[in-house]
Image 1 (tube, helix red, strand yellow):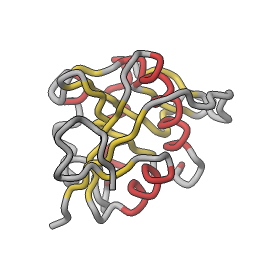
Image 2 (cartoon, one colour; image 1 turned 45 degrees about the horizontal axis):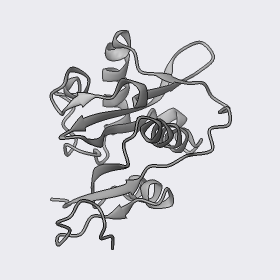
Image 3 (tube, rainbow, N blue to C red; image 1 turned 180 degrees about the vertical axis):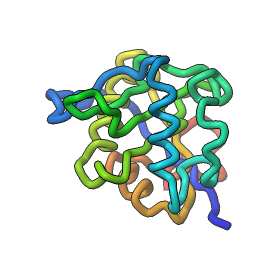
Image 4 (cartoon, rainbow, N blue to C red; image 1 turned 30 degrees about the vertical axis):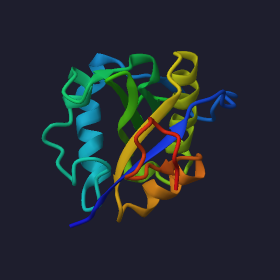
Length: 167
């Protein structure tokens, strides 16, 4: 069974030049399409946070994993409006947490997750949140590579004062 790794990054101003694909806030009516997209994204592969369990996907949206930060929870879509990737960010105990970040298998390797992450981190910074954390399975190489490329660092076990000690 894969181990979970918690990563943390400082938020800050990000280059938010217009994306090649539209980025927009997640809206409540997106939930049915996101549920289907989530199942496709994790079919046969490691899930980011819950070991492949998609049954409770709506939890981040309805507050089960903290209150959703609506301005930082974003989606990308095709020109006809089909959602291709999503990031859902919650706030727990005053801290921003990436609850989900996933891309439809047909739209991977196009930079969509990185685009969403960049816009999300910028938004969190403008909201006054200084850090963001995410938990991934240690065998999810694609997710780990993405987060590490965006200056996320492993949160160490001996970190007792917030987020000052990084590996």
